[in-house]
Each structure stands twice: as structure tokens, then as C-alpha cells.
Image (cartoon, rainbow, N blue to C red; front, side, top):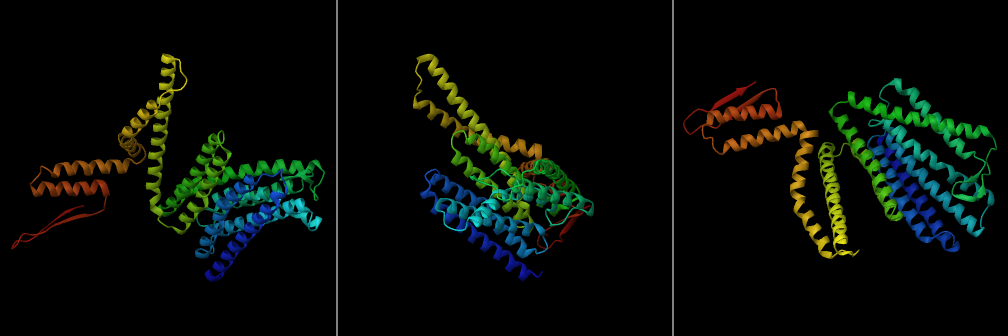
Amino acid sequence: MSTRTASWLAWSLVVLAVAFLVSGIALSRITRPTDPELPYDRVLLDTVFTLVTWLPFSVVGAIVASRHPHNTIGWIFCTIGFAVGLSTLAGGYAEYWLASGWGSSSLGETVAWFSSWVWTALVVVPPTFLLLLFPNGRLPSPRWRPVAWLAGLGISGLVAGYALDAGPLDGFPQLVNPYGVDSPLVGLVRVASNVVVGICMVVAAVSLIVRARRAGRVERQQIKWLAYGGAVAVGAIFVAGAISLRSDTAAITVISLALVALPVFTGVAIVRHRLYDIDLLINRTLVYGVLTATLALIYFGGVAGAQAIFRALTGQEQQPQLTIVISTLIIAALFSPLRRRIQAFIDRRFYRRKYDAAKTLEAFSAKLRYETDLDPLSDDLLEVVRETMQPAHVSLWLRPERGAKGKQIVRQ
């Protein structure tokens, strides 16, 4: 496939995905006011979650597929966005048919059935094949082909198990599966497929580790982008779990924004846009993540401790606002020194080479303030360059004075 054809096809899938999403959402919003059991706020929340979470897969997939037509990951992302749009349209039509009774019953049952099981493929396909094929869209070696075939077989069995389940449809409990098979074999296939897919996901993660150990510098940076996106998504899920105790809406919003990191960071890695910024991004994330957690612990611990002391001394439950103000001022005062200490610890622990280079440059800068002899400074400069940059060859040219010959200092 030529680049022009691939670009046309990829962006056509994006347009179809958006059209399906908008149509399905419109049908859902038409349906909700007619059914008091389905809250309107929930519809709006589901709409935002669907758009923010899944639409970036289509856009990033189109960008990757149009630039690298032979990379399978771009087409997987395009297909995911298209399938989500089609599922949204099917679910919206099924809800509209159930609420209004308008339309063909066989079509309504079929689209409801399709919408009830397609999510299984959307959940397991991206993590499995993304890990296997990243970053060039090919397997690490032909020896991994059995893993890919086994993963495809497991996903097919998993989808078939949910699609042929004879119980009520997922998302439409008032409907019974019109294509269900009342047999224990369906449940057995679904359980076995779950086990196979789980094993394949673990093996796919191992394949990425193997690829990282054998990778060159560029490919290793690409793998860092994917790992960072996955870490952000997993961390957000844990944060959302804690937030959900107070607000489900905020938890879903956090998950939606975090899941966007997976396609976005994958696309950045594949098209190699600002590829070497990932080291700085990881460094800043570690620093400010630890800093935020430390300051939050100090703040809430200080407020809770002050409240306990105030309650013990006065017997009142409500503590004065002055305690909160003082705690806030303490946090503001601790921000800069804590950030410097945490930055130094992380550089020393995880970026040792960079830390040693910075210390060498700092020592050389201090020596420049007092040293005036050019020959020792030249030797020191060459030594600093050798230790920090580790070149194969170093040359220092000194500008000559008027009427004199310049000289070159060379150190291998």
C-alpha cells in the first residue's frame, strides 16, 4: 500500500469513527429523557468518557498509519477507534429502540447483542498486540509467532464465549441473548480463553523486556515512551480508586485523561517526535510526584495533629482557621528546599552519570574563580570534557596573541 492510499484509508476510518460516535451519542441523548430510570448526568459522563478515551486511538492511529503504512500498530489503533464508534452507534440505536419501540425488533436485538460483547476485544487486543509489536509493528523475531497465534486464538475464544452466552445481554438486562447457546461448553471456552489471554499478555510484556535489552539507543527511547504511558495509566487507576470514595465523576475523569497517555505516547514514540525528551519527563515526574506526596503527607499530618492537640486542650471539635493558614505557610516554605533535595536524591540514585557530570562541572567552575594560569586550566578543561562527555579524541585550540603563534593541546 502506498503512503497516499494508506493516509486516505486511515483518515477515512477516523471520519467514520467520529460519525458513528456522534450518531450513537445523539441517539442516547434522545432516549434518556424518555426513560426516567436512566439519569441524564450519567449519559453526559459516559459521553465524555467515550470521546476522551477512545477517539485519540483513531487520531494517533491515522497519524502513524499515514506516515508508516507498514506499521501494524497504526492500523490496530484505527480499528479500535472504528470499533468503538460502531459499538456506540449500535448501543445508542438499541437504547432508542427499547425506549420508543420504533424500528425492527430483529435489528434492535442484533445491535444490542453486538454492543454487549465487542468491548471484550477492545480491552484485550491493545495491550497484548501493542506489547508484542511495538515499536516497528513486527514481532521481535519469528520465534514469537506462536505467541501471536495463541493470543489471536485466545481472544477469538473469549469473544465467542461472551457473544454466545445464553444469559441477559450486558448493558441490556431486559433482553436475552438472541444468539445464545445454552451449553456448558460456552462457559468452559470462555474460562479457558481468559487463561490463555492472561498468559499471552504476560509473555507479551516479557517480549518487550527482551526487545529492550537487545535494542539500540533509538528503540530503547521508544520503549521508554511506551513504558511511561503505561505507568501513567496504571498510576491513574490507583488514584481514581482512592478518588472514587468521594466522587465517581472525578474518578472517571482521571481515568479518561490518563488512558489518553497510552495512544499519545505510543504515537510520539513511533513517529519519533521529541524522542529524547522522555528522560527529562521521567525525571520531572519522579521529582514532582515524590514532592507532591511528601508535601501532602506533611500538610494533612500537620492539620490532623494540630486538630488532635486542639481537641485535647479545649475539647472543641472545630479547629481555628489559623492552623490551616500556618500549615499552608509551612508547605510553601518547604517547597523549594524539599524539591532540591529530592532532585539531588533522584539524580544520584537513577541518573548517576548525569549527577557525576554535574558535580565535575561544578568543581571546575569553582576552580575557575581562583585559577589564573592558562596551562593548568587547559589541562583541567580537557580532563572535564573527557570525564563528562567521554569522547574518543579531544583537541583544544588556544587563540594566539597578536604576533604570536597559537598552540593546540591534544589529549587522546
